[in-house]
Image (cartoon, rainbow, N blue to C red):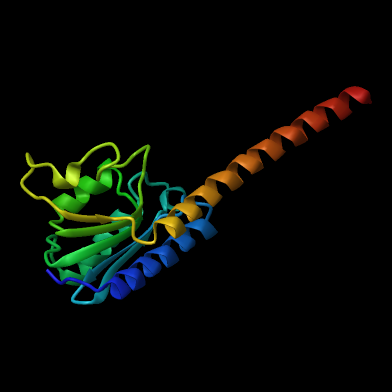
Length: 174
């Protein structure tokens, strides 16, 4: 497996952040992922559940599918996966099944994390494939994108409720 310098890792995580921005533009939860082999990106992905109406279209799944096609193989040996947020349980399982040996994530996923926050799927000794994990790469940037997304959503819901209440009270006044 190739080992990358801090500068290279940050470059790949910034590419994952660019993928997350694609989700953000589509009002999807902003998570992005790239898969790297021999210093080249062979798979990219971003959340597209709403856009494609498919529950499994997480960033990691999209990137794994693209990397599988690139490699013409379901095994993604000698690769590294960079993702902005800790993989969920589903994605952690897919990473293991794809035999990806190295995962780097930005921020933890306290509610759905399958790589340390809630579950340790990628490092569980009972499973036949374990993954080398690195966390916290560009953590503040990765976390901020998620926090801003959810904060904006809460503000929009609050404004919608205010408008409904305002319309209801003006309807009573007439």
